[in-house]
Length: 452
Image 1 (cartoon, rainbow, N blue to C red):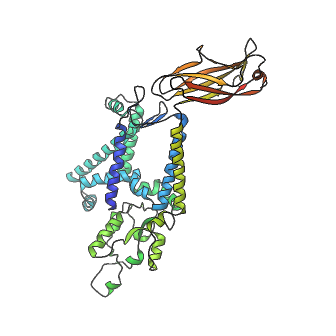
Image 2 (cartoon, one colour):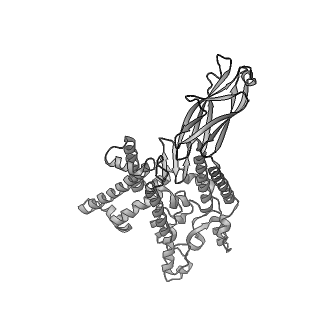
Image 3 (tube, rainbow, N blue to C red):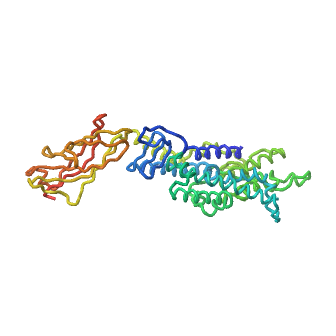
C-alpha cells in the first residue's frame, strides 16, 4: 500500500516539476505567456493570474513561513512524512532505483551483478545503459529548472542552437551532475550526513507523534517458527529480515526509533505481507504513537488516530498556518493595480529659487500593473499654495507603459512667504490617479522648508 502511494506521489510531483514550465498563460502582448515564471531580469514572479512585483516580496516571505509551519505541522503529527514521500532527494532516488530495476533486474539480480568481480560484456552493457539513463534524467532535471527562469520554448531553442547564455549551460551542468551523483550513488548518505532535518525533527516530535514503529511486545522473542513446544513461546516476528531488506536507509526498525528512519513505511508493507503468509495479524510494524505501544503492552486499547493528530501543538501550527495564509490571500485581493513610491532627494533637501520660492525634489516611481499603457495624473494635498511640477513635461500627467515601473522626477514648489517655505517640515500627500479607470493611490512624505 505505502509503496504504491510513493509511486503515485512520485509520478505526480515529477510531472508537476517537468511539465509546469511548458504551461502557457495568455497575459497580453507585453507580458510573458508562461504560467509559472521567475523573471529575474525584471524582478517579477508570475504564477498563473498572479504577478508579484519586487516591492511585494512579503508574499514570498509569507509563503516561506507557510512552508516552514507546514513542515512543522506534518512532522509533529506524522513524523518525517516529508522525508519519506515528498523530499526531492527521496523522489529522485526512487526514480533512479526504478530505472535501475528496469535495467538490471530485481534486488537479488542487482546484488549478484554487484558481487560479480569480473567485468564482462553483459555487466559493462548494463552499467553503461543505467548510467546513461541516469545522466539523461539529470539533464532533464537541470533543463527543467532553468526553464522556470526564462520562456521555456525560446530557451530550449537557444540551448539546442548553442545561443543560450553561458549561465544557462553552467546551471544545467551543475544540476545534471548533482542529480546524477545524489540520486545514483549518494542516496541515503545525503539524508544521514548532509541534511540537517533529521537532527531538527526531535524538537518537532513527541510520544504522541504517529511514526513507524515495531510492536516489540508482540514480536519478541523473535525467531523461526517450528512445530515444537518452544515455538509456542515465540513472538510473531520470524526474523525474516524483510523489513531490513526493503529499507532504503538500511536500518532495522526493530531496534527502535533511529535518526536515519525517513518514515517511508516500506517496512510496514514488507512485514504485513509476511504476516499474511504465516497467518498472523497485520500491524507488527505499523504507524503508531510511542505512547500507544506502552498502552498496548499493558493491555489497553490504543488511542484514536485523530486524538494523536488533533492535539494542542498541531492545532497551534494549523492556526498559525491558516492565519498567515488568510493574510496573504487578503493582501492579494486588496492590492491596487496602480502604485507609487516616493523618495525625497536629500542633497540638497530644498532649493531657493530666484523669485524666493522654495522647491523640493522627489523621485516618484509609478507602477502600472495593467497590460496596456495608462495615463497617470499626479497631484498633491498639503498647503493650498503648493504646486506640483513634472520634469520634462508642462503637464501634471504622464503616460506609463504597460506592466512597467516608471521613474518620474517631481518638484513641489511653495511661494515665498508661504508657511511651508519657512517651516522646518510640512506633511504632504502625493496622489496618483489612473485617468482611464479612476483608480487612485497615494504616498505621504514631507516638504522641507528654510527652517530645516
